[in-house]
Amino acid sequence: MPDRFSFVPATADRLTDIEMVFDDCGGGRNCRCAYWYLPNADFKAGWGEGNRGWFRDLLGGPRPPGILGYHGNDPAGWCGVAPRAVFDRLRRSKPFAPVDDRPVWSINCFITRKPFRRQGLSRLLLKQAVEFASKNGAECLEAYPVDQRRAPGTGELYPGTLSIFLDAGFAEVARRLPTRPIVRLDCR
Image (cartoon, rainbow, N blue to C red; front, side, top):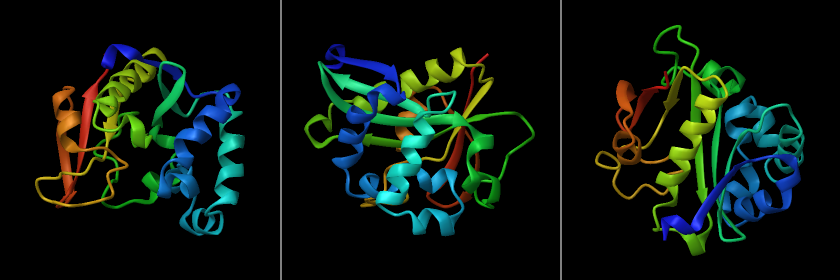
């Protein structure tokens, strides 16, 4: 089935398809990746329609904030990827504080619509996010996945699982929380 998936940068002209992906996910429906971009008070105040409007504005910016996956003509999944510097939450986070002074891009969110789950789409989205970031000048990619070996049963897998990143060649470079390592991939 992986050969039936295709991928494009998430741009404003694909808003309806992107919203279809987010709206098929309880948290995604209200978050719209604002968790990573906005100060916590603004994120919480915008929960729902406010974050939806904020995300529409983000899509109109100069750089797509992620990758959209399709199965045939059906929107199937999302992966958020952008320079780390644009993410307010990462600038303030102690557990995810910079490992060094390298300018990195961050992969922070995966959403897969229910009909397309358990088909390897997250792995394919990750591969496309790496290609997208590399083509847009990223020297290094970073992510903050969930280590399911240490957090069994977690339902909060939006940042992806450690195994998909390790399988894609990322290496763990720090772990300040027991279940949330920082992983990296050199894009040069």
